[in-house]
Length: 108
Image 1 (cartoon, rainbow, N blue to C red):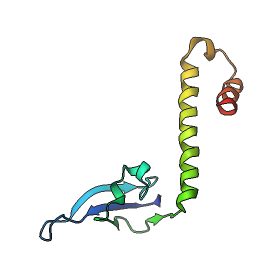
Image 2: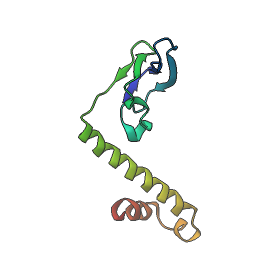
Image 3: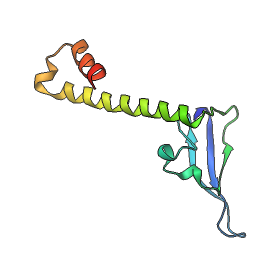
């Protein structure tokens, strides 16, 4: 996970004479090296990274710990969508904000 700065993700050519390709610029908050986070882009053995800015920082996590964080983030994202849907519903819009949060975050 990139915490500060930016990196570029490059891909070696499939042939010995082909040019190296820059396939993505990743910035703060981007997740690299996790199939579900980048669609397998960085799992390719021909892919490599290079810092794009001075002071770029990357945090490495154990895969199991990261999967737990990813699951938590995904659930929280779903809860925020449900909360937004409640706010747009005529009946639920009248509920107190605390009640809506309790419905979503404690019962979902």
